[in-house]
Length: 227
Image (spheres, rainbow, N blue to C red):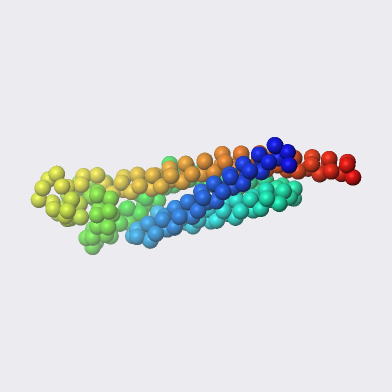
């Protein structure tokens, strides 16, 4: 086995092992998003996002395992199929990354705004609709404590540290909508970082697979000449 062929093969095996680990990380992250979404009173699209992330993680793991098999068997057909799979996966991830970025800027804000408007309407009718978010995110009202003042409602205990509103400094002043948007943006940032690491790795993987394919092809030609 030539040095270039051996190097390409070993690097491809190592890279696909890393892909497998990152795919598992994506699956775990998707499950975390689904679990978090299950606790929220209003659906902000997290259920769909979690399902897509899990599906992407599963696809990456499957392609990575296939890539390892293609490298071990040194099969030209499998290597070509692996390269095509990587190209399709890269395009898919670029689309998802663009959608996530645009969603964070536009659709996400609109969805969160509509969701918290509905929660505030429920809060006015039956106090306590925002309690979960106020306890979890350490916030108060949709926009600030002024929301309760406008409806002439006492600030609830969930708006205060340790549920003690007697101390002024214990009162959370930031609104829950802004806090929740920051929380979702953090999730999208994490997903974006992992996605770009995968995309760069997949481009390198496609190049290594092509190098291995070329080495196997050239070796087959040399063997035919000797026959």
